[in-house]
Image (cartoon, rainbow, N blue to C red):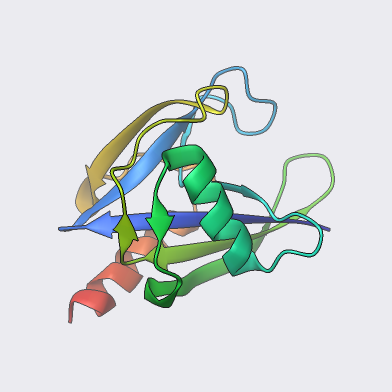
Length: 134
């Protein structure tokens, strides 16, 4: 089973989302958390650090990361194990570097999240962020 990691960069009650390019084979033209496939021999955390650097140009602080949720995803083909992580601290300004993967990045208030590629992540993100604020 393929593994995918995604990260929720959260600041001041907002989360950074990427808009998947309409040309993408999987989940085209929808908002999603940034991330990608775990490569052979990588841990989920190592893959998350690499993917967020490749896609957004940021360096996340591994100690600021906590598991948000894990779920099995996939449409039609082989299932994918998706793990979503809450990222509390990073260096750099998120910039859309992987233009072939997503055509836009945007900060959204948690109360105004658009439908996400994986609909179960939205409620988990809102709940975790509310607990984190407490």
